Image 1 (spheres, helix red, strand yellow):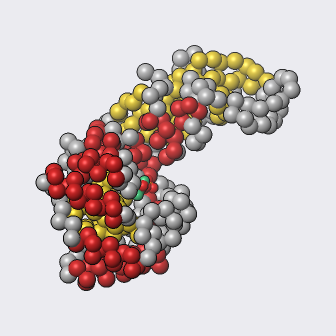
Image 2: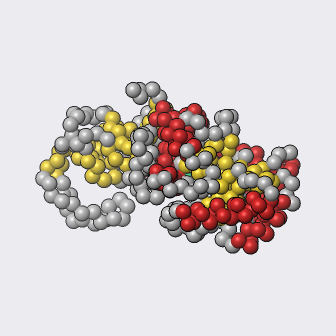
Length: 358
Ligand SMILES: *Cc1c(COP(=O)(O)O)cnc(C)c1O
């Protein structure tokens, strides 16, 4: 069924292996973040096969889908207090910053006869979630001690999300210092000192990862092969594990400049056109309803994307190396945002591809 997203599971297994190897050198246990592909279980399984034993997601519905896999589950978004029961049921670990929520999780865990593991989030300046004040942190830890079904397993932070703050020795150093202080206070060690997401990966590439970070929560780097502080490619990874396939519904020679008075396009923008004369164009049946305004890139040599409306993408195929016909399929690589939108769309079918890696 077209349009479809092809997911190359063997490429993801490879990427997971590479990330495992890289993190192992720093004493870091990675959690693989599955929210970029709506936690399709077979895709998550390919990542587990690459040697990653923790699966993390922002949404409890996604973690629920992963419960039969051989991996611990971690809830990334702060739990909604109204979902305390399901959080305890489907997440082994959750990231937290509110005592009221922790009390609700404790109660739910007590009823279910479980111990729920929590990581407290520290805001190191990115200004999304997390505790900023040391006194408040210490007071919260004292309160957690009295919650019998809650086990404090670590401290974590999230950076480069709201404020675009880049993780470095200084801010992560503060996280490590705080964790060590708490370990001394509690007289026991914390399993997780969780130093961020794919924006922390560059610190390993530059051999600057501060000693003491023991966990990273990594989505983009495994799925796209890139780090997200500077957007660089990580060497020896696959960058095209997710591909969009769309089908041609029209091919025609047309002028490059529209004919008539120019108003607004389908999304309220005012387009500008350069006159290149008559060009051969193709329309493929996919559009902004499917991938929103996130970038996709055509893999086919010599094909240029001219633009998209809700349901149509217009391509210039004048200089294409291949010959295309009505019904021909074209392939595109995706940005993280496009992958997220496409795997969420009910109009896009999913095809898992494995094998074919030499
Ligand atoms: C989404 C998310 C991640 C993973 O981010 P990537 O940039 O894809 O690695 C990690 N931690 C939290 C709290 C998240 O919400």
